[in-house]
Length: 390
Ligand SMILES: Cc1ncc(COP(=O)(O)O)c(C=O)c1O
Image 1 (spheres, rainbow, N blue to C red):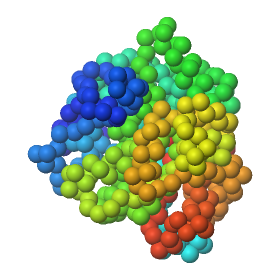
Image 2 (tube, rainbow, N blue to C red; image 1 turned 120 degrees about the vertical axis):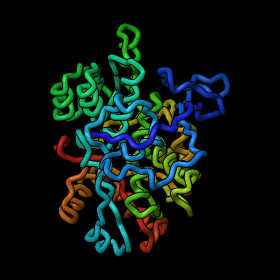
Image 3 (cartoon, protein in one colour; image 1 turned 30 degrees about the vertical axis):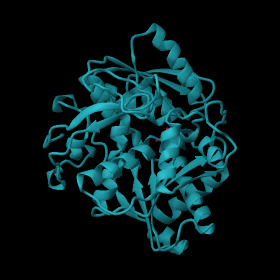
Image 4 (tube, protein in one colour; image 1 turned 60 degrees about the horizontal axis):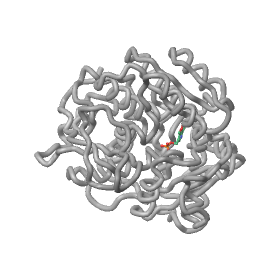
């Protein structure tokens, strides 16, 4: 049960490119701004009257403990399956192997439906419920579809999930168990997005696409709040994050800024490292100067399905986080991912998803290049469990 401690301090939505604002009391997707073009909308909060760490609801062992900084206005609209407040694990055997002082894994596989997507979809479905939506639709690489289906089932809403046909069966089956309508498409998530656009013309439904819907980001940002709280209001030096659409990366960065303004944390922020698949690495290619933008980039499928996002809608925001944090982006092959899954499983007892496993070879590369020091505190954000991929 979610125990309400603090009313939401959400105030308005803002275009991520300019100051134009939008109401939180109406259904919104993204900004279609004269000045900025199509851009994600960002939730802003009014917390200048104060919101102290002591007001965090410690009894609430889910992401809803930070309710004041979340956008749902009425408690009755919260659709929760107990997402968030996931374990922060000290990876001593991996740290010893790589001669590192401190290596942490924030393990999102403990979430409902087995991935961090639960956070974003719990938030988006709660907000959609609050604003009267009956049917939600999503293009997905797999995990978001399962999570949307589960939260819609819990909310008594209909879910339409559009997924690449090559996605492992378990991802499809869970959607069907949750009562969702599943549509399979040849290609990647970008092709699923085109199918979603067609369906929306004929069927009344609300598009929950990542970063085109403003509140999935608010769910994902709670990873940033938890990292700080679990480290006694300190942040690691480096965070590695498997980046597809980039919602978690942008969300954690937003959380760090909010916590600084709230006075919950002080000091510098971590360097954020976006880890991508060698089969689909638009952000790496932009940083290497091989692409100006991901707009026309065509990637190919990878074992790490969640990383097969050739044209991330929030490209500019991802690049901004990497730039502001002094981070970088690294790409990893499917072969390296598979051996990393075995290495992490045998040394740490965690069977983590391919997306999360990609972080280990990425960290090794940066240690070898001297871009991460062995004395630094490094956090690998494991986004999910491997069980659906086996
Ligand atoms: C397990 C997993 N990790 C990482 C990602 C990429 O997430 P983001 O869109 O936040 O970059 C996904 C997206 O589908 C995923 O399922």
